[in-house]
Length: 346
Image (cartoon, rainbow, N blue to C red):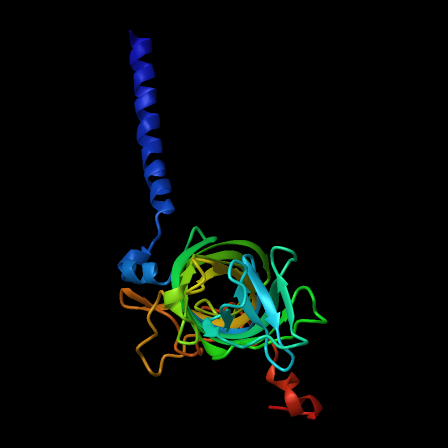
């Protein structure tokens, strides 16, 4: 019994001796001056965080349209000194037609000695040509998971139809250029893309546009049946800053239309209107942080005033808004321009 009492007394003494040390050790783990008592807690702006993933883009460039069609159920009539005409195989030369690219016009040009006639039931007939395009394109897309894009856009492009040449009988059939060969084409489309490769500040994204198109006044839209168009491309974005990008986009357009020839017993001509483009443009996103409101603030990185965070007001939008050391100005003043030859450039 005495042994048990002695054991309990020893344990109690050890506990009383060690507890203060444990308490002191626990207190040592806590900061002497907690930061939350000095700095206000920053409040995130959820709405702006969402908006910063929305990108607004504008681009322009140059394109070539490769047009081609076959003249099934039609023949070609070529009179020397005139542009070629087409006629119905089922009703030869009763009525001939011009401008079967955009606006079919009935014609009554007579056959003379030396005229050339050929029908599609005995030969392969058709024409091909090139057209010039200058597109003006605006679109918006949302980026998510740091890789994927989805959005939509609107394009309005200038179209100039070129000369068309025959795909057969080139020595007997001449070339022609449609009347009203200048005009505009409107496009409305949905957009999707996925980024697949990065080299430093350049991000490569494969993307797709699918939508509708409509030629304007130089085409007879009442006689045209159009389908959807598909555009496949690769966008190379160069990141000027977190919110501004310069990009180039080569792409290829796939589209076609059917032109009904009035008075030809329901016959029509199928046209292929594929095109290749190269466009350059700018893409802008709304910054996640507002610009610092203090005109005299010289902080060059993201910072807080009170419980709100701001981006620096020292950098233009085409420079990084939250740069690391030397990112915006990697070359010292003494190594720039004429200063290279000065002993004391400062």
